[in-house]
Amino acid sequence: MAEVSKNSVTQALITENEHGQRLDNLLLKKCKGVPKSHVYSIVRSGQVRVNGRRVEVSYRLQSGDVLRIPPLRTARIEQEVVAGAEFKVHLPIVFEDEGLLVVDKPAGIAVHGGSGESFGIIEALRRQRPEAHFLELAHRLDRETSGILLLGKKRSVLLALQEMFRTSALGGGRQGADKRYLVLVCGRWMDPLRNVRLPLLKYLQASGERRVRVSEEGKTAHTIFRLVARWERFSLLEAQLKTGRTHQIRVHLAHLGFPIAGDEKYGDFALNKALSREGLKRMFLHASRMRLPHPLGERELMVEAALPAALQSFVHSISAKETQDYGEKVGVGGSI
Image 1 (cartoon, rainbow, N blue to C red):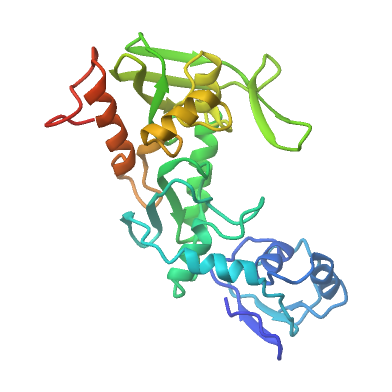
Image 2 (image 1 turned 60 degrees about the vertical axis):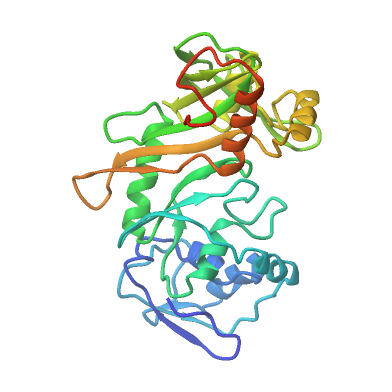
């Protein structure tokens, strides 16, 4: 779709990627910096037209529609421009085809702007790929989490991916996505395999910060943990999400008494300070692998992202100082 002009009327042809979207949602997305009230006003006053006719803000756009948008001045937020310059970084591409893009997200970067973040992965990718007509997040990762992140390059693919993740969030299924994470916890985890079924409830603290806790009033949440390696003070686990609740892995582990190393929200804060001095500057949670049916065909897609160098280095430093009594040996000549 054409960019909205501030000097003249924009006539835009609706493509497959905009098909089915509500008019107001499309305008709010394309007219960033324009007050929401003004966007609704120009629709209701008839300044926005579809195929020459006035329509409601709830109108669902169809491929081939011609959308008329009057001249609009958008506010340019200088902070976002500065932040955008900081994102001229290489985002490793794990997989790409005509409908799907998979990146290896670094830790410390939000997936999108908002909630105090002026810029995120999606904004960085759009700026790096100005030729991309459509690029949208299919799911999210916490800012502190690294690893596999999927984006749709076509609206049809995006909707298919979102349905898969919705299916997974509700408890899996044949058409769901199989997500695996690597996580280092504080403490000696003893079970080679453990199914954790603890319901999770979202709530707000007095400060307005969003949190999650285990509660019988919460939604069903199921994580499968597999022990990968164990030392004197730490255990490395693989976490498989059978549901997809907010902060699920972090809250399940903290509730069980095995907080994630470096987790500043649910972790052991005194220990985190000590770990920072030992070299761990982030939360040790990495989306390492995902398997799912490809939205554009019958084949299965498997994508993997190696443990980041900083996390590899920290595990090796643990192995150099502590006895490992479970799993394949980590360290010189070893692997994770």
